[in-house]
Length: 486
Ligand SMILES: Nc1nc2c(ncn2[C@@H]2O[C@H](COP(=O)(O)OP(=O)(O)OP(=O)(O)O)[C@@H](O)[C@H]2O)c(=O)[nH]1
Ligand SMILES: [Mg+2]
Image (cartoon, rainbow, N blue to C red):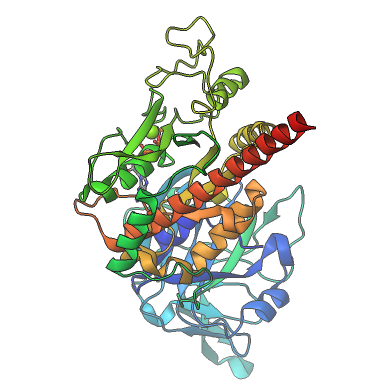
């Protein structure tokens, strides 16, 4: 179990912590380990920097970060000038804020009988003693966030925190009220504690064969020279892009086109909107390095899949079979039929699709809605029925790992990208070798060797998957020939 924080949430926290790329490891969770203070200490004590995250029943998500270890060896405040409280979501809507510590001496309070406590102060209390004398005691209290003590029982999948909130004691809450911070309710669905450490790079978990300029030129030449296997009669490999709105389908075509044109191009319209930006079916050709002739593959860009509408089964079948004309205007309310102008009534093998490339956004892959997952599964089963190979291109890896954002050649050393590839391989039920992480050109003006190499490497894998289909085809043709000789 990796916890409930999404990649985007971790990036937000990483940005608040302000000390370079971070790795988050789930140490403790109410739902996984039980809401019991002794278990909290067993799993979280002496673990260095941690982030505590509380998920309340109104979908507000908030918590605190400290560089100091939790401990149950003493009852004391600990100094931490890097500590802060934060809110990530308010009533389900992304609304993040950081609340820095204003009294670092009292940043956290550790006690064997309490879970995480952020902030607070010593209060002086006079206690009467024998012979009428008053003794002044310093007692800790007024905690900004005191999460829980003892054991909390779960009821209807909810926990009721038994600590108290006195925001503003040691943390600067600005004008944020307790209601705005955490709805002032104590019912929560989970409390998680993550360890926070500097991101370490792994030894490469996938080899690419070099990241220098010559490697890129070699790969460009290889792809430029690629052609469908002899004997199939095919002129090009047709690769169908399918994926949710905004996943980066059109951007991937632009990225490939940019590599061969030598600068970042925007032939396919890209952007962000609730509905698909791409409304026209395009079978894009890409010109090779010399820009005189097109290469022997076509990248077929489609309208994005939406949760509540999108391609119907018949339309998808027409796409697979090559009935849909290049330039066809998608219309979700009236899908294509044989009566549509330009409908390719008798497609040949050269019109059909030879490989399906699912394209998904890596920064949101692990939090895709159930509805979207169902849609994708339904599409996958149609792809399988057709006997078409499928690969999954995972875009926006620059948003997943800061090391990769800086230098794409670190992609196969990144823990975050490795976890992402594992997750996507599980979701799609495809081998990890068919999950291809990429970063598209998006903010850049000039092409970069690291970005180009990774994108071309992915394209090479896609062409190899198309070849699998084509070799099956050759086998079938050979079988037919043999049978006709019998
Ligand atoms: N940071 C980053 N942004 C990307 C990447 N790929 C695409 N984008 C951005 O994501 C947004 C959507 O990209 P598109 O290529 O239009 O996505 P699409 O899948 O074609 O979307 P529809 O046509 O609407 O279905 C654009 O703003 C792109 O600039 C990437 O690898 N990294
Ligand atoms: Mg598009």
